[in-house]
Each structure stands twice: as C-alpha cells, then as structure tokens.
Image 1 (cartoon, helix red, strand yellow):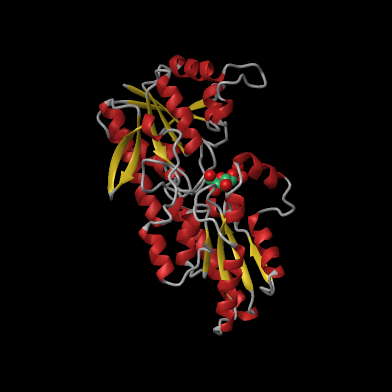
Image 2 (cartoon, protein in one colour):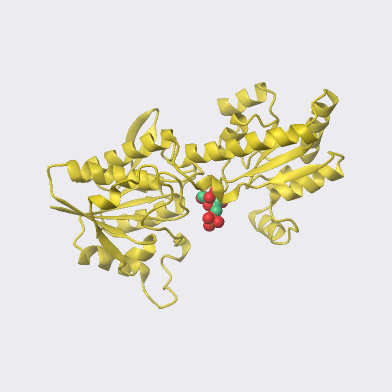
Length: 357
Ligand code: F6P
C-alpha cells in the first residue's frame, strides 16, 4: 500500500486537473494499492491539515477542466521559515501532517516559488515528486511547462481579435501579455498573432526605436501596428538601474502597467491613437488546449511511475522532446529566460518583427 499526498500551489493554470488525473489514473491502474490524499489550497492545506481522501470519482471528468479542483494559493517561499500570523511553524506543521498521515510521498504541482518550498521539504527529509506548472514557461530544467501552450492560445486569440479592429480604425494597439519576468508567452503569442513589435524583459527596448518602427510601417502604407508587450518588459534606461532604483521607480510609476507607460510615450512621440488591451487572467483560464491535455497527462503518468518505483526528489520535466526526471535540487531557485540570441528571436527579426532593441 502506498499513501500519496497531492497539492497544487501558486497561480493556477489550465491542465492542473489534467496532470493530477494523469498521476491518479496511472496509480489506480497499477497493481499496488494506493491511497491519495488531496490537500486543499496549496501548502496551506498541508500546513493546517486540511485534506481529504480522494477516490476515482474525484478524477473523473476533469481532463478538460481548467483551474484546480483542490484549490490553490500563494505561500511565498521567503515567508516559509517565518511563523504564520497565528505563530505556527509552517515547516514543522507541514512535516507533522505528512508524518501523521504516514505518507510515502507528496506530489506537488507548481511553478518557481512552489519548487523552492518543495525542495526545502525534500531537504527536510520528505519524499517529493513535482510537476512543472506555469503559463510563464520560466521553470528551469524543462523545455516546457504545462499551461503554457494553453495560455499562448488565449493570448494569440486576443491578438487575433485586436487585429481586425486595429485594421478598421488604423490604430496602434498594445496587447499586454502575462509571463511575470520572462518573455516566453509574449514571444510565442506575438509571433502566432502576427504582432509587428514584441517587447520582452530579456531584450530591453528603446522607445525611440519602437516609435521609429511604427512610423516606418505607416510610411510604407500599413494603417495599423500591433505590439505584444510582456508585463515585465523593460526599457534600456530602466534596465541600467540598480534593482533598488528600479523598484523605487516602479512604486512611483503613474501608470497601472508598462503598456500604459509605453502608450503614453508613443502618443507623445507622434504615434497617433494608441490603445491598450490587457487580457490578464483570461490567459490562465478556460480549458487546457489539446497539446496541454496530452502533455500534462504524460507528465502525470511519468510522475506516478517514479512514485511506484520509489524514486523521489525529482521534477518530471521535458527535454529535447523526451520526458525526463530532473533533480529538485537543480531546479529550485533558478529561472529559465528567453535567450536574446536564440534562433526563435533571430527568426522573428528576419520576419521583420522589431524587439525595440
Ligand atoms: O505566474 C503566473 C502568473 O499568471 C504571471 O504570469 C503573473 O505575473 C502572475 O501569475 C499574476 O499573479 P496573481 O494571479 O497573483 O495576480
């Protein structure tokens, strides 16, 4: 008999349910008897002992459902060693829940912050297997995370919608894309949606070059321009600031986000009417796309395989088109960013897309 705990932590995304179903179905199909305990609302459920025994019925009909049926929450890693508002020692509490339930392993689905805590629990002696979740695709150790392709679909669709109205009115449109500090989502959705300008955090922009590109387009007869701007996009000027100075500047910024600042600057530079569209959390919502359904199912199934073999301390990732196991110790605390010299960036430039650099 194996007793497994399962939790989803951090921002949700499409295919979390799909991945958990993949783990459960594979475990339930194995010869060994298995009990799966689901912790509610991420690490909070583990800290406060909020869980329930899951059955086959919990995993039925969820292949295509977005969100997470266990609920999720953010428990920032930097606060994990600090006592909670009720004075609770979070790490000790999580260990206590694990040992009380006599778990053999915890399956943790999450992104960067989640992986730091997962690795800490591993260091504390718990058996952990993780799955790479995030629309940002910025998790180190895997070429792809689940949720990413679905979010690319949503953001692309948004750019597609904007295209028709931008063309009718001859406007400059900015679509602000999520992705936290990484540009994967913007780069992919921008290329898929035919954006003329793509601004990502890894390639700081010069606003004059952005304005020049728009001017050139208009002079060559294009009536409209679409910019895909990452929420973490940064100007060359701001990129030269120290972390502290930049934080201070952000705190005093009079615009709700970088896109509105860029819109105001472009208007000042004579870019004409500039509109901003922010699809925001819609990028994390709805059903997982077919790619993510297959991908998350495969990852989940491979995680179950590791558990059945008793191989713990790994994230199940994807490298060079193969499902691989990556030591958690290697994953935790690292980000995977877009390489400005990557071939996809070069190809985008050859297609005429400006990165404002
Ligand atoms: O990490 C996923 C993500 O959607 C980021 O792209 C975004 O910056 C952040 O989460 C938004 O967080 P929240 O849901 O807490 O507003």
